[in-house]
Image (cartoon, rainbow, N blue to C red; front, side, top):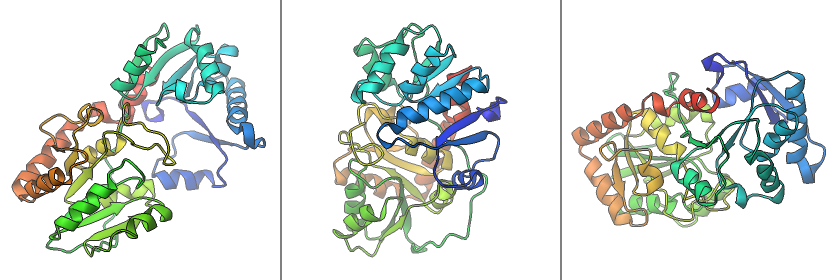
Length: 338
């Protein structure tokens, strides 16, 4: 939003980090203002954060409030401030406060837009009859093409082996078991899992001791692109059900919009992805190979096909071409606020 020329203030929960540390962590240029909000009421900290943020915004005489929570959106309605409600999941699966606040905003005269990050999620709201008068706009997630790729990363892979990468969380529904099974069958390839908590890594390591599997652990968002560039091929083995949300709970497989796949496309690497509707919404048929989510034989076959360098390079080019202006964060920002 700030790159589009808007004056932006982001209200966050106080993390104990300095503002500069936050920008460095995400690798973002300091174009906008961050204001940390301290909460003193643990049981209602979300409500406290919303109240303080919205009242601060009103003091600043803002033109528009954008939130993924219905709570600050409802407060904006009460204070007669224009707002955008950006839903990334079904509000009826959230707590009762979120549900009550959504009922408050659905008929609001101050709601400028309601946005969702996938077509499937939009349809879920339509099926529930929960559509505001302004309608619902699909604004897919985005990515950036990193211009600052580091070459000094310690990389344990073999020089003569195909480097197969996976980035992201390692909890349920992300297909880590598929990656490890492929590594067991394809000893000629090196498999790199980039991300995950120490507990998650310990869990998966307890069941495998393969010399061609490397767990890199958590990587700062500002450095993930550099790790992707060390891979020849990237895997997105989402499962058709049981895809957990942040924290490892819930199931968002029916409506997710996979940022991982969009980031993969931005890297200009060849991709093998699960053949599920959420992924198909993002990647056209000729820009990746698609595997049956739960069938490791299907994944092995796709990886073997990608071993041919000319084919792999061709797929990488198609993937890169598919990443255009419609999949940048700026494009999403335009849909939200213009």
